[in-house]
Length: 274
Ligand SMILES: Nc1ncnc2c1ncn2[C@@H]1O[C@H](COP(=O)(O)OP(=O)(O)OP(=O)(O)O)[C@@H](O)[C@H]1O
Image (spheres, rainbow, N blue to C red):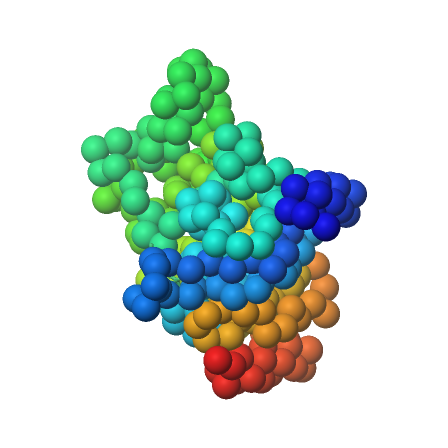
């Protein structure tokens, strides 16, 4: 089967399966010749609509690269990638996803509400409509009362919630998050994990979440994708056995600990991978 036929088949298959993301033998290499860096190697992965998928693996294994490829910010070197049955470029143009970066990247001179409305302002949406959108999204992240504050008046965790509200601007079906809580203390992170999980459960969004933390991945996810060291491969996709509704106390249960152990073992297996 040649490439266009393969692409057509894959689009058809992902649309039929209702998949949010399908990667098929996806490889990404940066640079050329002897100095080239192979970031991802032969990634095949299906992310279903409504799944919460965490990508976990050693530093430099290509987690961010995979997220950026889904967002059409990095181009595959070989293999295929579909987002909601479309090319990543078409999905980007259709505003199918929202992207949350490691740092909140808010503009300090704009209020919280005006940071959230910025993407809508850029596309020329009317003032009343974008204010209503911002209110809806700030309510969703539990910051409805902070619309008039400035970013510097909020804690780091609240700032990251604002950046999640901003990522929801175009009502995306897919939320891509690159270690959004990595810089925060553990208690704050616990609260945000709980909040994010509730948001996901309430909205039916598909989430792809990069993390280094095993408990965070296990707490949040329906599926945990464990990657090997660079060039990143998928070592194992672990499907969660936890109930959909989650409480922080669940982290002490034997089931949670057993899942954490499975992730840890897969990470160790992946470390031996070349
Ligand atoms: N634009 C680029 N040009 C060249 N090399 C790159 C580029 N982006 C990423 N890389 C390299 O690709 C590899 C994977 O990087 P990536 O940031 O995706 O890993 P990661 O798993 O997200 O790492 P971390 O957990 O440390 O954030 C690294 O070796 C990195 O240096």
